[in-house]
Image (cartoon, rainbow, N blue to C red; front, side, top):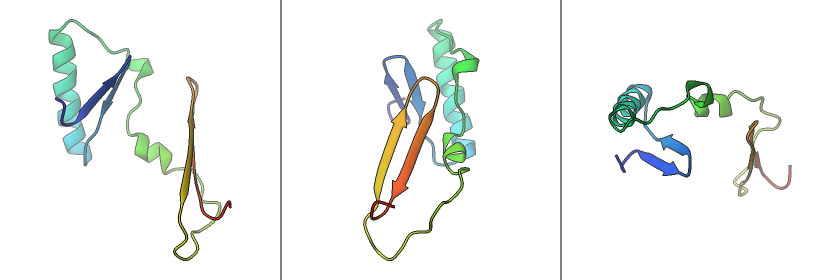
Length: 88
């Protein structure tokens, strides 16, 4: 389990390389939770976060080979991230 899952307080994060692998990992975790009589509340689950992160509009295209800075913020109601280059 420690190869594709991280548990932090009350969050379970499952990392996979593709959709099929993620479905296998998710099945493994759900079976384990059921065996231990633990249950995930489906309404609190987030699936395919990279798809959500990549669906935002692009405000500016990258320029040259300048370094990037990632700014992230999260709360109980949402998640936000910005990839910036030269403070733009």
